[in-house]
Image 1 (cartoon, protein in one colour):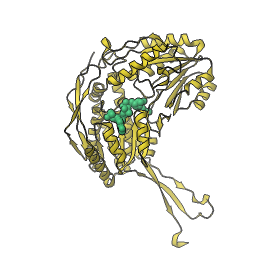
Image 2 (cartoon, protein in one colour):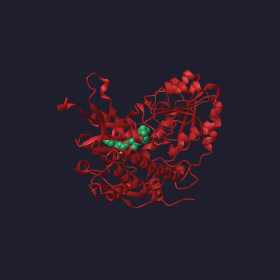
Image 3 (spheres, protein in one colour):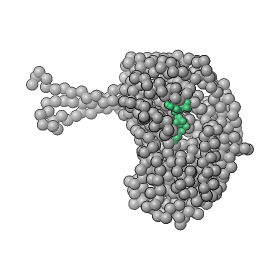
Image 4 (cartoon, helix red, strand yellow):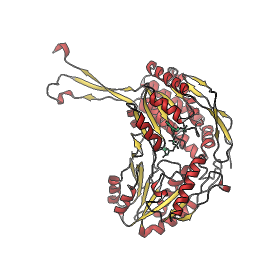
Length: 491
Ligand code: NAP
């Protein structure tokens, strides 16, 4: 059965409690068939400055208690949950992922908001035992958390709802005001989120300007956010190239960077190969492979390579490719022509370099103009593009290695270090992988793509700086003040 996509969504900017239009607009396209879903207002520099200054005033004026911040986020979660079905349709309409994946994303976003609400009540300071140093036995000190002020949240196209919640939820929980900037090809679901946030803001009586959202060019917005002194923190999820630009220009601002990956998953010979293969293919192809921690390299021992490839092919061929609104669809469209063409080029170059296509390899045409079939590639070597670049498409490149030392070395043979997975029943191999793979997370008996929303999440090396996961993001969005009570005049 195929469901209706959304159309006619006219987005505006939310600045200081008002929805405002701008002179210029940009259409948002349904990736599967190119139809127009809606449009967004393109903010200019002045409008981004206004949003930042409104947020700054709100941050100064806001006196929300922890309980009120909890209420703000719980109310937002309730609004989102009430409209979950239409929000999921909007998400699939603009992003192109299968509807069932959008439903999961909306459900996760509701949970991320509730986890953030709970975290608002856990801003504990700590008592500092001053008598640990000679001469301070009569001093009493403790720490307290304070918000930073204005937090800017810049998000990518692939999880446009939950990744925005991962930033604004913890930022508001810590007592900050926010300015959101969603990706230009998937902005509408974020605008919907800010509608719910704004309703909840009014319900709890917080100052206007506590939540703002601007749409339009990333570089225009990004440069204002970098330059404006009132922005204390920038939380960015997106490509490594843009992340490095922000890092080079952010001066003293707090910066969280959640960037690209080229994540390995090792399938060793002591595991259930069929079950592992099913998870690997799911981890490589969900959201048409457009997931930062998707399985991008499958590392296997040479002596079981054929067995693993056959299991991967079976799993890949069992996936249904098609219209994202069709409930039977597992793999649908990529988000836009740029993403699609990048994957096509990377695939063609890898095959030209000698990789073998075990299954799949079709793209475009009758499948849909931006759709790529799940594709298993064998004989992939570390120098091939599908092995040494971020693969943001449904490719499953298999690299074989002679022994476990080589598997670990291959897992680390990348500039990225987001997440890794290993399937093994051997405790010593699992421990070695955990200790020796240089990534922000090592997942034993599942794929690199594993993520729960409250766990610390963030990569090493070119994959980023800092951690998300509610509690950890709240730490980035607040500062600790030391308060001391001393002997003073009563000595
Ligand atoms: P992108 O091109 O870097 O865009 C991300 C966001 O940055 C968009 O909102 C974009 O706005 C904005 N932007 C562009 N230029 C900017 C600038 N100069 N200053 C400030 N902001 C700017 O990334 P994408 O293609 O949307 O997303 C895919 C990438 O995100 C992949 O590399 C993926 O691995 C990574 N990612 C990482 C994680 C993680 O948690 N580590 C999660 C998801 C995705 P416009 O859209 O208007 O250009």
